[in-house]
Length: 314
Image (cartoon, rainbow, N blue to C red):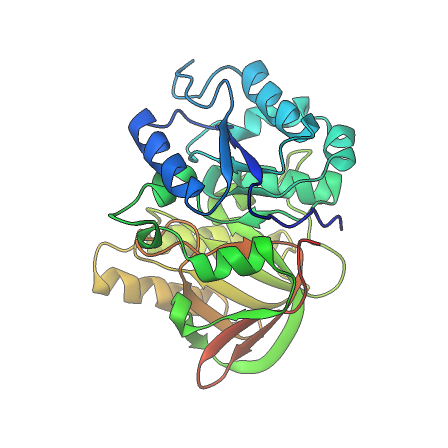
């Protein structure tokens, strides 16, 4: 896969909205905090657009922002303002050759799972499932309330191996031997909804470590969507699974426990270690940055650990 250049101080980073309209005050605050990391945020034309419906501009304007961000040689990375709805509308209109000729880090989560799949499967580009300007950089009283700086720095600015552990919320749901594979995944609803389309989720070659997370998802919905992946054959080469933090899925501790029981029941005929609780995506904690498409090792013994064995940047 293509490794984009790592971020350095002074990097100009495009701020785009491929999905829904963000709230401008949150974007402005998020950009201010983003700039404190010694980057220069560049707000693209449709980033604050409103409409049609709940989208940040029409398809043409959102596609143009993405294409312009990749083709502009002064822009070194791209980060989304927020998720929401509508990213899938862009897929038929995106230029893979342009992206491959101008690879850059792309950062976002939630609805942008659709773009992560497209970048990986159509362009062969490493991307980053991680914090966004409005929900994370603007959250709380200080930057560290919404953004896990440890993983951000390691994923986007450095090239050495590193790890995610209980510090980032990980714990063992089902123990097993340590396994290695390519890290892949995203928001579970978007992964399952891609199936049956020209842009359906396709697992990379070799063994896989699957990461999935969600928001507002009840136990039966987790059960149904994970069963969908199994019936589609997408767990055949998955050697280990990392589930995200459930704080925005479960209404209380009882429902959180039921989600875990549902997952264990669902995966009773699948063999492999399972971790849960990684604070990446829809979380009420500092949001972790995950490099997608890299080799990782998952350990679920006395404690859970996800070791990032190779860099997604160069």
